[in-house]
Length: 491
Picture 1: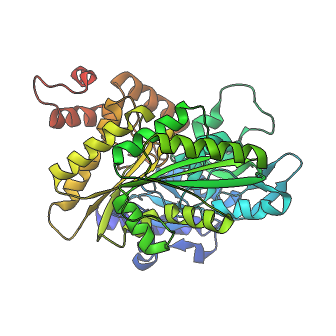
Picture 2 (picture 1 turned 180 degrees about the vertical axis):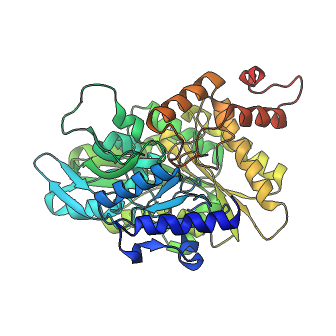
């Protein structure tokens, strides 16, 4: 569209939205729209056509009906903490912020669940449930800010997802507004519901199938006791092998996290968690349950870590020390931001047995691309978060960081893993979808999308690449006689 056409469309939409929303919740001016130009992946920015902030479900429905009638794309946004460009707006589209739908509607201790609006912060659910002896298990590092709607869109995890599962394992029901403005209920209060499992399909769909306007989440009893062990290693690969050793011993920790030296040093400088800054890597292993079971499991964990080559094993002596250990891990991303002008946060998942190999190859890639990497892992379930450090003011560094990150994701696929564990695909990993899925499966993804959104108005251009895009990706990355991903021959 030309600028005049864009301006005309903006004015027309604003007039129509004003019939349903107060004027202050329709953001037209460039300065008002600027804060919405990106999510946590700040390397990519687009200024949206308009920003609307509905305050109830009826207003969401009205916005969706108008955009559907006008053929205007819609990108839904929560707190904007996502790290894959999933909430990146479109210059000819509406940015639909759900920040005002931020109420906890009900805490039901008898049925161990809560009904919440999508703009409720992750941590706020546990805070509201605590007086009833309950909590919400998925705990992303950004839980103080990220919203449950965004968690559902990306199928977020957290440091305790090894034992308690991702968002998809902790959702019972969703209220969803379709692209046409229709309201649907998906799932229910029972353990299962008839028909297709649309609840799992909607969770992790990145706002491409519908707009979540309410969620019923599972709550769990707060464990009688939780205790964490910190182990130091003088070799990163040894630490990676220790992760596999713990799981192989039949131990299922509540959380099992790994940090390498650059990330633990940054976190220690920032939080003063008590980490051994000379260690090549540390593991944080938490077990929870009743007092007797935790005592027995802690003893097993300590011995297994020592047998696996730990140079130091320290058990948190009280809840305050336990909280400090976790505070350092949860602050790792912002802490790394203090030691580099910019960083590029990757997210891939691999079989645990390949941790030593993948860590070694990431180190080799770091040398190859001339960029440092700080590694933070949900190690227990093989979910990697390498942070590639770069300076966006230096020509070519962002492009090298993107290429480095792409190679890490392709390595994850090569060893039998996947290109995302909890951050979603968004714009960041769309090319690597071509490495993971053959054309037939990509066509199936497009068919599912079309069933919910025939015009392609919901978050278009994200997550699912076109076959032409994959053909171009294959031509750029595959050399004759050295076909790393054989299915690309089919394009």
